[in-house]
Image (cartoon, rainbow, N blue to C red):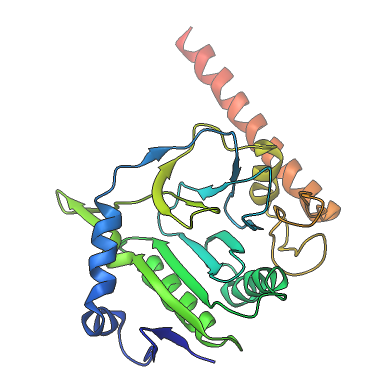
Length: 271
């Protein structure tokens, strides 16, 4: 089934600018989102999502009411929600395996919506800017194409990405919105910052920094090791691939040792 805007299929053979001109309400909604000041979200009730993670839950969750992520430059933050069940997923995409990522978040939201006979799937895309290497535009196109390939109708509701999230200062381009949050209870989406990015921020960051292969919920596939919303309210982390991760750790330690030696030598020369 196709990706839809106002019930009409998106023509992905044309540039995204044509889609924006054909559906001016998308630009108006992006403008409204950009105009909102970023809210500071405190850790109570928050589940923070890092790069290459996703989180999914429902309004019935007694522990989590807000899903959020930030620090997105060329990355995009995606919110997928089923309007019937209220099942909501937020993911922080970097373009490493977009089709697999979209398939995974689709199945996650649908698994929490099986008993719901009404409602539809709505997607909100935020992030990116007009970067010189056009990485943002590439990711935008990948996401649109991936959602268009899904077996279910997906309705594009928010499109605040790349050119619609760009500001320019002295010929240098920057994103306007770096982070967003979604209120699982009310479905409100708003720009946000997060003073705390737990739980286990260092462990989760290390999984990305060590270059560990993508994994899917402790299995193969994408590295989404933060999944919330299972019946017991658990959080799952993928296993590190020991050989590669250990080698990467040694590589990082080697760099630290090299910089330390260079620092000592520089200090000795100054003395």
